[in-house]
Length: 329
Image 1 (cartoon, helix red, strand yellow):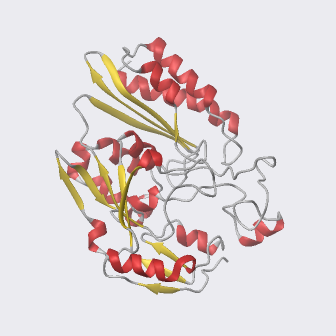
Image 2 (tube, rainbow, N blue to C red; image 1 turned 90 degrees about the vertical axis):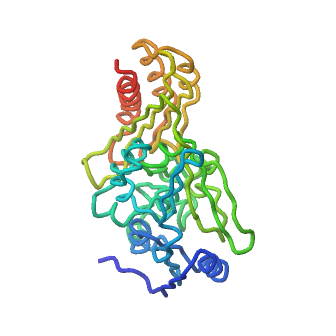
């Protein structure tokens, strides 16, 4: 049986106090909200913090606010379950609710948070295992080792991004805000936040707390969907996820977004396919061509419980299905 390492739990009352504790304890501490991913990783001894700084008691991080001018602002500790059932989100941002509903199970969504999904660790067969399993193979580049078992010649870790919600948030042009005791608030575009490296993953600073997400109001004619490939309908992380959106204007589509998850170490925006579709009428022919571009550019490795070639072929299928659904083909 895998047990949790010993730690001290700290319960700050506000964001400033949480940031001060994070700055004080540095690498000895981890932030925790829902804990649905972190606690499992701690049992696997991937992380062994001496302190856990709890965020779920901070009311400021659990707010949901919407205005037409400012859009939707979500505190980082808003649960995925709340997103799936909030009437305003279902009406104004159904694409976000759809993606949130695809995460894990109802039980895990009741605890898992939107901030946790944004900051979710990358995954790999050779990383997300017990300490003894990893030790028997000599560990790996991402934790305690020096090379990548999946791609031995790679200079970087190839663990994949495994979040369902992030590709949709990128398509919705989300901005995220952090707070640190030293530097105050910092806001960045989510699309610029991730790094295509399984270890580095993103551009959060060690002393920062993710405070909120802001999603602008969708323009008239906006359509979007999210398709997920997994072995079971619940529990499983994506073997592939496809977020597609565009704005329909006089039979043409604009601001096209096609974003893949569980292919690379960061969300993969297929710019070439987007450019092909931009300002075009979404005919079956051009949809097929866009899906083919996505298929050719996707380069999955053997990191999930489905063969890479199958996942690559399913990129074509899911992109095509998503575009057909939105274009009513």
